[in-house]
Image 1 (cartoon, protein in one colour):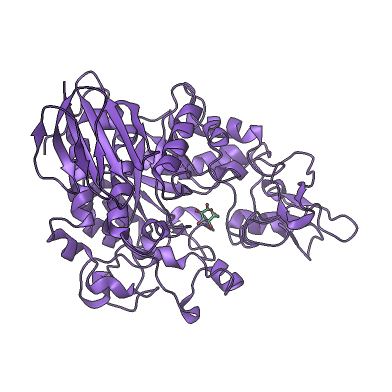
Image 2 (cartoon, helix red, strand yellow):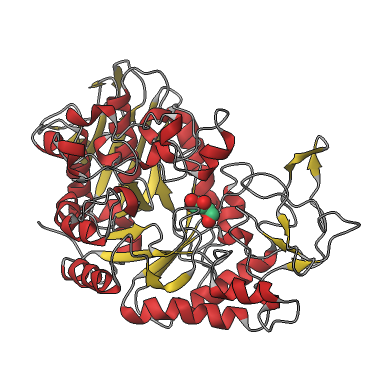
Length: 538
Ligand code: BGC
């Protein structure tokens, strides 16, 4: 494949990244849970898709209360996923194929079974006591009103020492104290362990929670309701940007590594807050997720507004990254409204993700339009689902096993899958879509192929052409080599379009057109939910 890679090609900026939830991607040993050898087996599929890097949700040793986001040893692979030998093989094989490997790094908290916490909890005088956040209660009550993101007060009383410890998530996930003078250095050694091995970077889990108010002031309540608080003293503190800068400095000791911050800023899509974490020169992280695409309503103008706001908020030198879904949210295809035309909408969204400015992240299964699983109560695995059912059934829906083929368990496992396969696996799977020219999977492959050949899609300027008010979002991607035009019809109606400039074009990829070339972009019929990429001929 002809790939334009000039000297300025930077894999994490210009490539395409794929997010793997390892429990659900591919099982190799029949225990019903995905593993590293399964990922190795599927690298060829990812290569064919055109992927440059994978981000794998945590695989460290863990009691799995939060399925790996509760780590008990940062230098070990959990046996459920395989061995360190398997991981080294994954790294070497992926690198040999030109695929980078990004790990998830959880700095805000460990598992309560991490030896650091066990020591810290053992007595108030333990040398590691201050590695976690311990406080006395106030008149028999928790030290302040801080809430856990997963419900209830964030402080847990430890009967033995009579003090409370902070847990911003489950009580089995105690928060680390980054103000301790020793802890950051110790933690950075854990990160270096993987960087020295050749890991290409980290996705930084809930990194905006890492710095808490020094004075432990209570958060202001919304309408006086304790469960509804503005996290002014617990999230996005100025000091978290300083800490992130230290992480960046660590990564910059190595070549071509990336840091990607997960920052949910209230209200969803508060891009100004997200942008504060992004690199100005060497400060801040390389990338920070903008979740505003996820929270955009299905409307071309709403996408346009969110995208422009995001781009305008970026500091000089800051680079956007874009995502449609992840392991904590609903599947993107099910967020598009009205059950009609979802497949067509998924193609429009995919084209946007892959041609707008910024690094695209694809959540596993999105490329075949995987739906939310329908999980019965007895099958719920996510502790959030168990806690809040039936008000909220948890995050399992977006974590069901990858649908590879129409055979037993969709080709995911020969055993009993840890979550049931989606019912539509027989007719929605990789094998079936590979054989169908107009499938969503082939659409992803085509657009990624065009993106690889046309450097303007990787690094060119983004120049809006139509702001979506008439249902069509259109923009140019431009560099010194070429000018591309992307036209996305978000509506189910045909539109007639004339561009103000007298330019011609030829189709590079389209949901509705074969190869076409014409002299003037005048009175062109844009079909319902058409997503086309044109090379502009001046
Ligand atoms: C991860 C979640 C996890 C939480 C606590 C998040 O942002 O994506 O899956 O439960 O951090 O670690």
